[in-house]
Image (cartoon, rainbow, N blue to C red):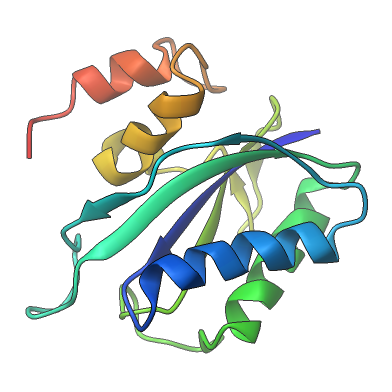
Length: 156
């Protein structure tokens, strides 16, 4: 199964946190293959407290023989291993944020894991790096490609 994963960090060694997240994912998920990696973008925080440091964001695509629920559990465990508390204030600063964007054509409204990610089509900091690696991807529930969704967002 192919998984799109967004990575973001705005605390500490932001670039190092992104790389450690990828390294831990590769080490923890047997047989995982990195099939795409976008460049890293520095972005202003969205819906965060005033004075919040800028984020580094990127998107990777991986292939693994696991369920979306198993991958999600690994992503949450990696966040915690790198210092993100399980209980936290919404949109608080973070060493590492890992969000599953999609898992092939899986659609899920599960309260723990909604797929595809419900707000990704509204977020430049997700669509821009995703367009680096999958501009022609059409996500379940969308009629436009990632590149078209990005083009319709207002300029920053």
